[in-house]
Amino acid sequence: FQITYAQHFNVIIDETGESTLFIFQDSISSLEPGDEVGLFDDQGIVDSDGNVGQLLVGAGTWTGSQLEITAIQAVDLSQFNGPVLPGAHSGNPLSLKIWDESNQMEYAVESYDLSVGSGTFDGG
Image (cartoon, rainbow, N blue to C red):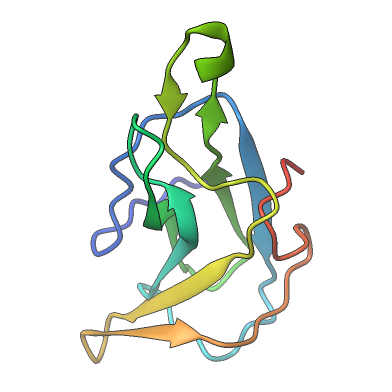
């Protein structure tokens, strides 16, 4: 078991108790150890007022082996006079960005393979 901490992608929202697990296989050949993976929801819940926008909901650092990232999902308890907790909106597609450590560049990823996770924030 190994814990890695991302430096470029820093998730600033709190855990909500709802999440989606995404697992990236060690067969990825385009990443180098030290590269970072950021999971975004382009239409996520960004604040307690329920406003929508791009939000980083999970991150991890590639070590050359399988990478598990748990993405935080939003929780809306307003119908019970509770809070709206920021996070990914259920059913929205995953938007993936990579921080290339050696080139010091961030780029969007158009296609990717997951061993766990459907590519949407579905609580799975």
